[in-house]
Image 1 (tube, rainbow, N blue to C red):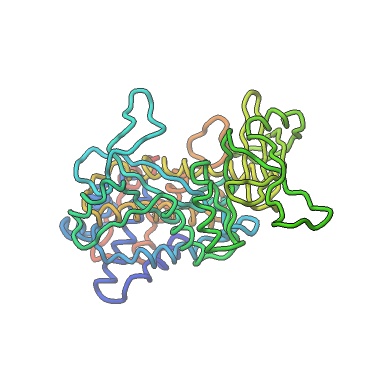
Image 2: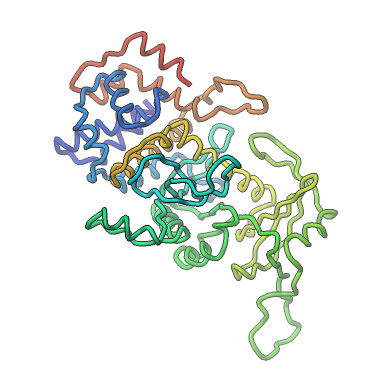
Length: 441
């Protein structure tokens, strides 16, 4: 009944009218079709899955209109979904990962597509692919012995020079230019107003700076903290010394200049100590050194942790001085799960393959895919037993996202699922389809 309970609460966000009931039912089956490892999440494939597996007969034209409907209550659905996350706090904090990714496309006139820079492009790939640039935030949560990233919200980033061309096609719904920092601030503020607890934003060095710190600190106050990575050439300062007697003028904000991050890393390597930390799914012994300093970029004190490897090092910082060295390293290591979520969203769920072009259809489709991912992780966190890993991989003992999808699909194939969300036509499940679903990864 776990999957039934989750989907029923989402269905209640639709209106009680006949059209609302119909949209709610179609919404539920579309989510299940995305979660099921049947095929990619193209609209045509989703309709084929709904008709073949669940026996829901929908005319193609009507379903395509539904997928591009501007009447979907996405704000209410996301707020309800945030409230259904069991125990979202980790040691009293909402750990929110922030990053952006690109979604390459091949067709022209696709909403939010442009020539964007890909810093991770390989030698045989274009550095400026035709793609969508999407800023995303996700909740980092420890589920059944492993970290996971639950998508919470997203924004399409539009290049300022391309907004005028896009606005000509949109008509009344004009797009206003927003920086990536501004989009991240808006999304985190919305989540903070709906969920309780301290906010710890975990980001790489691109987002972990004053552009994110100042506006969120102004809006959320002491409730907001940031955990990120220092650049190698960033200058660090000691805490100001307490004066022996009162001097004229304002007190010093910064102590003596200690040096930049790289020079201090070589200086502190011999002072490091070993810590046992749960990092990347297993217990590891890490050599690290920590010190509380003043960051001139944030104009705030921060705890800096230098993590040393054989020939390399990395410097992490947190404005939350109550975090221990183990917590700082583990939380930043968990940030990688948002990168894994992008891969699962684009390749496992299949949002990379969809070629929808209309702005509303593109927006709705990405909402569907991210909602399906979050529903899957909520389902996994509420299970009594840990999902079994189907495909063994050396060095990986924990279950994968595909195992969660397979478990949710088995629950959706139960006869009681159709009874709870009745359709106009009897389900045509047969042994061949059931066998196909069991074989799918």
